[in-house]
Length: 566
Image (cartoon, rainbow, N blue to C red; front, side, top):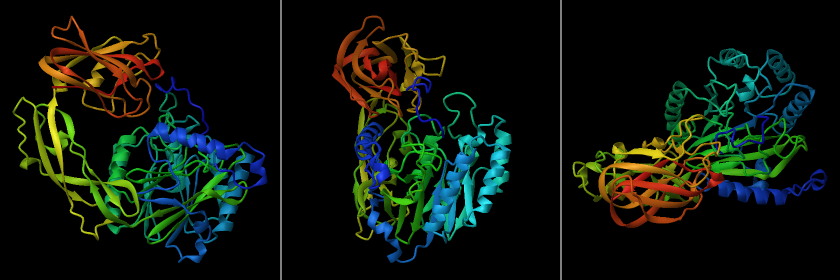
């Protein structure tokens, strides 16, 4: 992807120095990496590390570089992306990368080019790509994904998808291949722009996502790592916070069920001197770029992987200098033994009258701690809700306990016989949002549907937002009609799930018995993050509640969900 700098308003919201003379005359990349890593890690709230506890990756420069003394790997793989083939310079950089990869691993089992093969997706560029591939040494098993630049000729989705699938010899932009018994799953966008903030974001159809889940379920039974490739990165990862994947939530939910999944993404051109592996419930790896990286137009990088029975070694390669990148050498351990279960936190604020099911009550997964790291892995729980004393027909506050049985995910063993049972305490004390209505002194309804009602729709992915053009300066407020009079004592505020524009950092809470005369009952400040906040006050009867934003990130106010507790 060629665009590096983003305009947040247009988007609707918002190193170590390698010991090489040519590096030493450039900027101090160690200082740059240290500062920007701290900033991005804090802003994104995810693991951005050279080690991944849970499915751990540890920096193993010396071990990885000397991997030849280990047992032979079960499978080897080269991964590159973002070639942007269009002219003599991009052709030369691509050929140099292929030559260097062949020299370091002449018998590699497979190679993946992870999108943006071309700069405009024209017939001429594809012909040149075929010519360069035919004249260069490469593994027989060479596979590709579609990138956003494959659509840049503006000839339409149908034309460009057919041109790509004809080139790779597949029926769809998504497909599967097996390499030495390991599953390679390739995903790809099925539409593109050409205009708007989501034009370069991957758009995965429901059919593609269903196929992915079916394929993961089938391949997970062999207990091996599963390699997934998609050009665009997951949201808020790898040096990018602009929209990059429309179905981010859906893909995240699918991959979270299969912790052995490792998804590779390019798109951002993030330099491998930046942290390039992220561990959540699965593993994400940055495949950087051959054309250029975020550290300079001369930079050109890629990955070499060695897969063993119990680990995967990931080695970052600098094609420009023809050397390994010490900061981009990782080991991912595959086998994990359970050490303990982390008891889930109590749940409060469930709506009165909520159905007596685990899904309706929002009962969670549990975190597992393994012997390969402290970062937890999520595991499913079968909650025995029917055995609890909760009665959904009662219209009063109820607190009860639900017991559950934990199912270990693939790849996690229990040799120490840790009891696979847990429990959670639930309090039903929130006024149902379904009976409320909402109004606001400012709301964005032209550029997108960010109306006040989005804050009480029960969907944390939608949100209320003040006008994007900032014609309504703070303070601004949102008022809830509770649909009745209740003795309330808390207002819960859930910020938007991604980004932070409009996160309320200063607030007042007012209550009213008639919707006309309001009395202030609470005020304060909240931290700028995506976690749920509470405003607590003395119990008071109210039929209306007003949340006033006195301060918000970048001068806006927003709310994904607002609840009122009794």
